[in-house]
Amino acid sequence: TLTDRLADTFKNLRGKGKLSPADVDGTVREIRRALLDADVALEVVKDFTGRVRERALGDEVNKALNPAQQVVQIVNEELVTILGGQQRRLEFAKQPPTIIMLAGLQGAGKTTLAGKLAKWLRSEGHTPVLVAADLQRPNAVTQLQVVGEQAGVPVFAPEPGNGTGDPVKVAKEAVKHAKSKQYDVVIVDTAGRLGVDAELMKQASNIRKAIDPDEVLFVIDAMIGQDAIQTARAFQEGVDFTGVVLSKLDGDARGGAALSVASVTGRPIMFASTGEGLDDFEQFHPDRMASRILDLGDILTLIEQAQKAFDEEEARKTAEKFATDSFTLEDFLAQMQQLKNMGSIKGMLGMLPGAKGMREQLDNFDESEITRTEAIIQSMTVQERRQPKVLNGSRRLRIAKGSGTTVTEVNALVNRFEQAAKMMKTVAKGGTPQIPGMGPI
Ligand code: GDP
Ligand code: MG
Image (tube, rainbow, N blue to C red; front, top):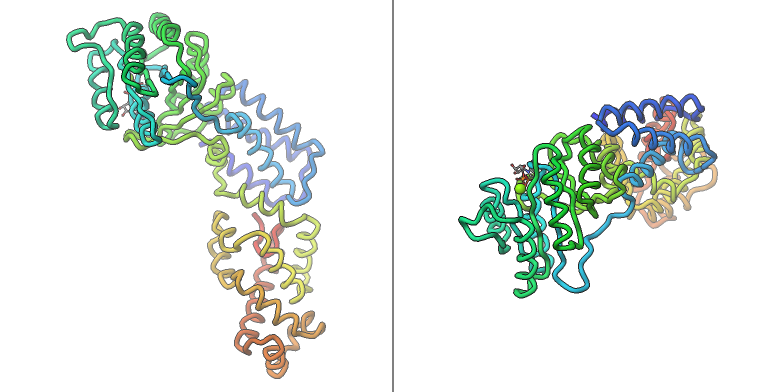
């Protein structure tokens, strides 16, 4: 999957200290392949990798991140951009009712979405009405009525027995009805075909002209694959739309369709449908989707925090100290103080995939203890701080008294320090701990 392949790509980058142009090219090639495998359209892939390559090779220097992290960050930023940047909310009409029309292929999830939207809007204090303007399939009206009942929202439909009516007329009447009954949102469900179809496109376009909706949402099945581009283009030309809804994101969808559709049509993805139930629905957040595609846990959040609190120079010095055994209690204290800036240590480690072992080892690094640690270390002589080995029983007693703590606490601190130094030394020898106290990302 796209996710797995990108994760592999980044894994290969992690061990690197510096990236050469060849590294960047290799990585970009991998990203390109991963995106193509995930059915992202070729033109979108080209565009995307071109920008990533340019930025990765450019002199965008970020001192707090190692080069591999920088590539991850660039890829993430470009993904968010392609997915629409900022999350876009529904436009409501200044004069109610707000009219929302749904369009898309048959089976895309329009009718289901109509119910989800209605239920959500109702929970937000709106008074929506659903409109059955799919008069193509015999049971389409009934399906919408069932959905409306589940959502607790009324459905406007042609009289029974009148099932072959004109959807344009039904839509127009529905808007009139909404005005007279003071419904503030009108959600118009329309018909679709299995493939793109000129006649139905014309019908949808006519409905649009007749009711002049505030939003036209193009609903597309996230599993559609390479057909996404062609379908999206056809609907953009035939009906045009103001936003995209990705449905069936609960399945094995790889995000390829999302990337392609948003990029090719320039229309933002506004909602995601994630199941058959009416509550399986969410507002779409480009940044979260990008993370989902990257699938590196919340590693990007971690990188952002790291960026704030550290610079690479500092990290490298520390790594060197770990490796050469010249790490001291003074460094230990400085580090704990730095970590304090980064928020809860445990919280940080919680965001790091695969950091469970380290998390347990660092469980004792509680923020509330930092103040006490400071007191203990400040009660030590310079020699004691630099060579903790000299800390015998009488020195420990003196330090405990001086810092208002107990010998047990002093012992615990020294133990923790020794453990950390040992652990970090191992890590430092095997890899490149860029974030002190945490090891390599
Ligand atoms: P329409 O033809 O565009 O109106 O599509 P429907 O709303 O009738 O949905 C077609 C099928 O897909 C139905 O069986 C729905 O239950 C199912 N479906 C719709 N949205 C989702 C979704 O987000 N996830 C899953 N798993 N199934 C969905
Ligand atoms: Mg339908």
